[in-house]
Figure 1 (tube, rainbow, N blue to C red):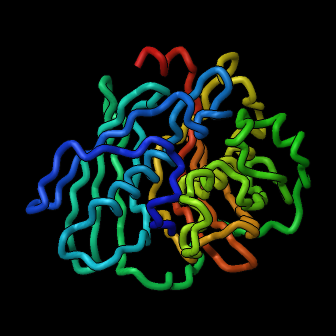
Figure 2 (tube, rainbow, N blue to C red):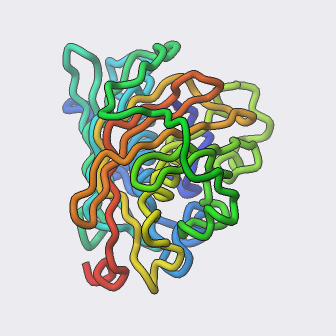
Length: 309
């Protein structure tokens, strides 16, 4: 989606701590600076490093250390990601990456850990650099367009449901909303977002302005969070519960997104299991599918339980 190494969602660059080019294995470290903009508003009073940025950091580390015999690579799919424990401001994350090749292309398997706990397991699939093939909608278990519903919801109404604030509130309005079923939401991409602040001067390469995958996935997740909180608002995670991303399965990335584009997310609640909700859907820009999500799992967890982990 965005392989340009100057457009980062995290300010502190990672440091290579171990390298074995022969086995295509690398280890990199990233200290989570408490001043990092991704902590603003995610969540107030309980900042955590969102799972989407664990995926993005693994992706950027992979592009920084590709296999020696690989051509230019483009991220095609996030095949799986499982988030095990949260990471907090001040933590040092160690990512271990291992490249393998199969008949369909290159795969990077990444694990992330803090000094205390394993944090994530991530599997990324890459294709040769080139224009992304148009994405088709997967065969979801229900419609991705509903003719009616509650809504639209204004931005204040969205903020009355979910805890995201400041620079991490990444949906602007809800177009349609049917509790327990589906939501469509919009997000206007702008150059004023924090992901673009560290471009080196006025970059001439248009690819430098491609929207990073972290906020793209997070914007989709926040649309899902509107559905997840339909029965019970979740605006104060300390008084209520933390809405956590548990896992992803089979996300596909299409053409890049740029400032001036408007993301339109269509998210469907596939099923609910106790305190876990499973979502599927897609994101379009001017009718073109730029992201498909086969499964995103959200769960509520008490903040004090997470702090004890």
